[in-house]
Image (cartoon, rainbow, N blue to C red; front, side):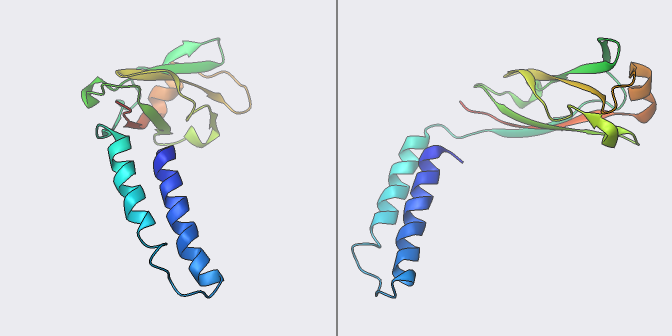
Length: 146
């Protein structure tokens, strides 16, 4: 939610709640404010946001990093983002992913992808063979900011 939209929601909520908290009758001066704010927010938001989601192939694309970790470059080019997207990620598979750290830390985000680094939370060695064996994959959701 954009800052402008958040402000509009907060202002209209405060006006609505104020009428109840003070037990004052709803005044005509309070009611028109919300539609005017919503109209302004619509114009301020500009182009529509694009939301897309996907996942990597199970067990594929994982590379060694520093002897105890792995990284994977996630390709999001199929989403056709045009701005600087905000990504959210998780790691799925048949097991072991619960003991990973770094699964939602996004590095180097661009319109066509990003990278995540993972390691075991206890710091022990992790290899691409482990990721392949557990069929780990990255789920992602991107919200474009054109």
